Length: 93
Image 1 (cartoon, rainbow, N blue to C red):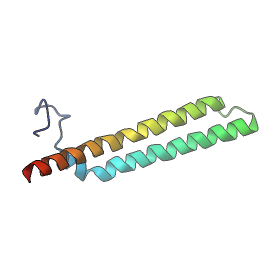
Image 2 (cartoon, rainbow, N blue to C red; image 1 turned 60 degrees about the horizontal axis):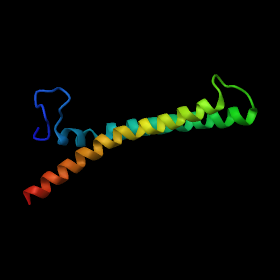
Image 3 (cartoon, rainbow, N blue to C red; image 1 turned 30 degrees about the vertical axis):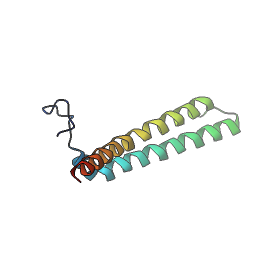
């Protein structure tokens, strides 16, 4: 917990525990990526048919972009934990 500003905070996690949960972070990222692909395909189909499938085609594309951006966030937390662990090991050497 050396990397925490407030060690008593429930949000403060040890980088090792985040790295160990990396599979969950990457799985969440994959789910958001697949959901973004589904939204993009719905937007393409909606635009090709010149029909409205629930929302306008441009809204499907914007929803896909937003989902892709949100899909990056779980990876960022995991990558930051790996980096902090690398820096810690590098200091020990």
